[in-house]
Each structure stands twice: as C-alpha cells, then as structure tokens.
Image 1 (cartoon, helix red, strand yellow):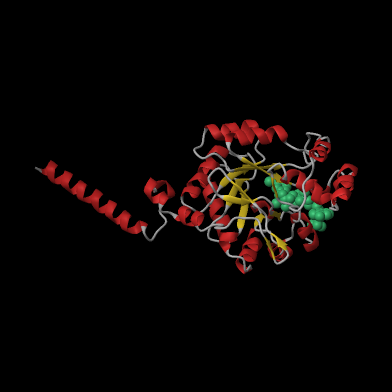
Image 2 (cartoon, helix red, strand yellow; image 1 turned 90 degrees about the vertical axis):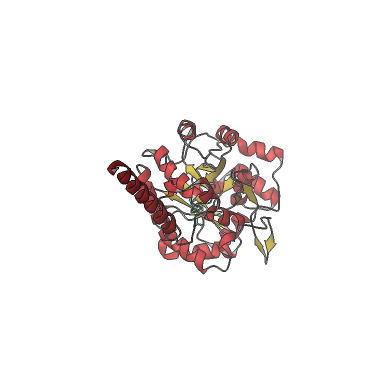
Length: 329
Ligand SMILES: NC(=O)c1ccc[n+]([C@@H]2O[C@H](COP(=O)([O-])OP(=O)(O)OC[C@H]3O[C@@H](n4cnc5c(N)ncnc54)[C@H](OP(=O)(O)O)[C@@H]3O)[C@@H](O)[C@H]2O)c1
C-alpha cells in the first residue's frame, strides 16, 4: 500500500515538473538541447529565413550596385560580393560600414578577433536598409569546446545586437572544433544563426568535422586571390556542398598586387582597375569575395565588377599567376 502511495506521489511530482517546464518554456529560453523537432520548425529559424531577401536579384539602384546572390546548401541566399572589416579601427568602423551599405554592399564580414563587432552592429541598426536585406558574418575566436563556444556565441550576439547572425564561422580549426561546431549547430537550430561554417580549415580538418557533425558547413572562408587560387580545394568543397569564400581577395595588396603586369594589361583592355580584374577573376568562378577598404571610392570600385566579363584566354593567363602558396604563413 505504501509502495503504491509512494509511486503515485512520484508520478504526480514528475507530471508537475513537466507541466511547469512546458509553461515556463514560453517565457524562458530553456537549454537548446531540450528543443524537439517540432519546436525547431516553429523557431525563429523559419521566421528569419522566410523573411529574408524576398527579391534576391542583382539590381542597380540609385547608381549603386547590389551584388547577386549564391544559394548556400541550406537554401539561404548570400551576396556574392561583401565588405570585409579586418583592420578597420573601431573609431571608423561604423562610418565605413555605413559608407559600404550606401554604395550597395549588403554583406559585411567581421569577427570577434577584429574587435569591431559592436560598431558593425551599430551601423546595421543605424542603416536605412532593412535588417532582412543585410547579411552579417562573424567568427568565433579562441574557443576550446562546447560550453565556451556557447558563451562566445552569446557574446557575439550581444555585441552585434542585431537579433540573429546570418553566418557564423569558426575562425580557425583550433580547440575541440567538433564540439565547438556542435554549439553552432544548436544555435542554428534555434534560429539565432541563419547559416554556419568554418574558416581556414584544410581538407583533413574539414573531413574530420564532416564525419562528426550533422550539418554540412555552408561556407569555408579561406585565403584566396590570384596568387593562391585554391582550384582543387574549391572543387573538393563543392563536392560536399560547401561554398568557398575568399579572404584577402586583393591579396591584401601584397606581392605588388596592384602593380601586377598581367592584371594591368587586362585591366587596360576592359577599362577597369587592377583591383576589379583580380576580384572579377574570383567572382567569375563563383567564389564569394569580401574586399576591404576604408575609402568610399575604392568600395564603389570593388563592387562595380558586374558589367564586364573576362574571356577564357584572360582567365587562363591569370591562372598562371597561381603560386599555390599562402602569402601570410
Ligand atoms: N578568415 C580569416 O582568417 C581572414 C583573414 C584575413 C581577412 N579576412 C577577411 O577578408 C577581408 C578582406 O581581406 P583583407 O582586408 O586582408 O585584404 P584585401 O581586401 O585583399 O585588401 C585590402 C587592402 O587593399 C587596399 N584596397 C582595397 N581596395 C583597393 C582598390 N580598389 N585599389 C587599391 N587598393 C585597395 C586596402 O586599402 P584601403 O583600406 O586603404 O583602401 C587594403 O590595404 C577582411 O577584411 C576580413 O573580413 C578573413
């Protein structure tokens, strides 16, 4: 009899806890791991993706050029030309991002490491372009495992203060990156991240991640420019469904990029600049580019690469500039 009474008490208690949790979940963001499949479906993920880029065509608006999009493996549309903010001092980041948006950029690439997430967020909030027409990337830095990655994502969300992040990358394959990526997957399912990916992962690291995760990275951002073209790696990533994105697409000005004779000759023929030829070379191969500049005239120049095409011969002569070596390692 007392056994039955005890059991009934236990059942009531479990039932009570369950009902309380269910009621609380409406108001509190309980641990993401408790989310069921149905809850994921109804989460912000759907809302954020449905409202995004309803008309994602490339347009010329008031003398600005708006980049065409690439569809990532989860259906999210990402601008093919974005604006990088590495090395832009915090004091001028907000102005630079607003300048970039004013000349047509809709994608901004920042990172925790750059120290300017807050200013990027301020610019996004101050801009008159609706949030769902902008695409904001940031990158996690210095995480070791699942739990500090969770804290780190929360910090980026807080610094940016833009409701959700369009693309979150693991900046480098350090720490337990499989566990770090699991945190990204959980936040992706909750709708706080529209897409997720990696940066600076080589083939081996990429495969290790792929074999131990559920979501194929949407993007791998790696060093890519005319001197390091990453041709085989691009095909490798494409075969698995991951989009390649080029960092330092202007080789950061290194190796006398802006004085290169091959690029200079092609530039003359098209009445374009060397920067535009180097960027068009990557763009024409469906590689996402994120050139950086603090000068509005150069920002305009770097996005203005849609009105001409490099011929097969020109592509071929630029291919010969590939050294296969990083400029920065
Ligand atoms: N994931 C990673 O590990 C990683 C690493 C590096 C970079 N990135 C990302 O990639 C972005 C771009 O890379 P980056 O900043 O290293 O280099 P970049 O875009 O290849 O080159 C930027 C340099 O070129 C100059 N420049 C830009 N446009 C120009 C033009 N039209 N004519 C002449 N000079 C021009 C800039 O100077 P001014 O500013 O004076 O115009 C700056 O010195 C970064 O901002 C960052 O978002 C990611």
